[in-house]
Length: 531
Image (cartoon, rainbow, N blue to C red; front, side, top):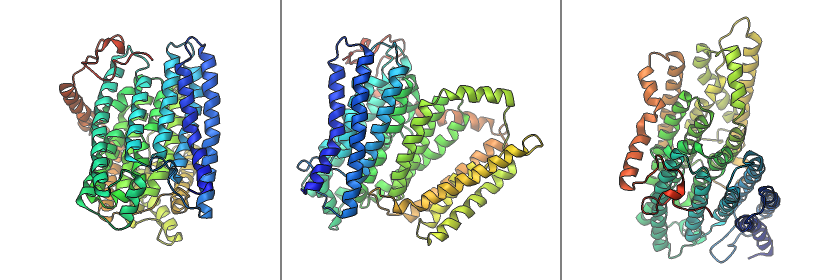
């Protein structure tokens, strides 16, 4: 290992160690006042943030100077460029959530458990981002979900929180089994559990049905962990948890599936069936969840369905082989969703404004012209980029994604200025997003592209149908009332999944006064006592 890489790896490992120290400190605090515990946690979180930033800078310098990258601790841990980006992002979110929580939870009991669990989640995420072995990857991901349980069940007297935690536990155990199978298949084929050895084996041109099945199991595990349909219900129901927990879950935990898929891009390259699974599940989740969120009023529930749609779109990008887009999507979505959850209270002001000014109906002409205008913007910048920025079908998908931004209110004498400003802002946003998309292949993320043309056409058709349905909801809201009820219920997919979960793994949740009342024989989620 070069001295440069050894120093870089040591700096990258420090955030995980600091968060472990924060968790142990909170766990051993005993009767320490909450404000003192928060002061310690926030200081360690900010220090970890500084080291995460330093690790990213060192990794970028190492990549620019061409230093060799080898393993960190044996074949178990290693640092990678995309991992350092995600590490900095998650630690930034963790530090912000810690500062927010210290005020948000003031006066609440069990803050010691909350701080210890929050620190444990962050430490486990850092460990997952350093994983260079199947065992470390599986153990770190399981540790994240175990620590998240204490945050999700923070209010132990809320039945729906208990039901959601139970459903999440069952889903996670299924994902764990799939990950273990994927690891065993790859280990048997390569002769090693090291991910570095797996990448070298694949780079040498070796492909086999065993590795293809390993990729399928990995894809299914990620689908389960990222709460895609039909196993998505728990993500909506955990809105019972404190708002900062929702921010951490949606911005820094659920989207780790995207990181794992980008990391395992070489394995997906020899597992065509796995990529099609990601395309199908991702497209269905993006389309259905994107429609459901249009029918929801509650701010946090709306954001939860938005996360399901975004995770579906991210996994769709991975299935299509657009790993750079998926990587930047992960980073952008994390910042956007954390801000929205921590700023959720602003929905009250927005509702008050609408009560005063009234709802504004979108112009039908803008809905008709939005797609061709967005497509013209995307194709113009694709031409300027030399037609190599992305495949032609992805230009259509991007245009359909940008099109709703170009919807503007119906013009009237009172709103002439407002409509003009809205239109200018929409056009500017579409141009800015397209420019960002053109710069994707130059971003120092550490991911590559491997487009899958056939699946891209399927994605284009699916996104077109989604756009037409969105327009129908706007233009004929009363004519599609029956369909709207089905959409509001998410086509009842979660009801079916909940039924089978409770049949296969029964639990008491309705009317339970605390998690501690439920016994280990009935559930593995809420029997854990306070640490």
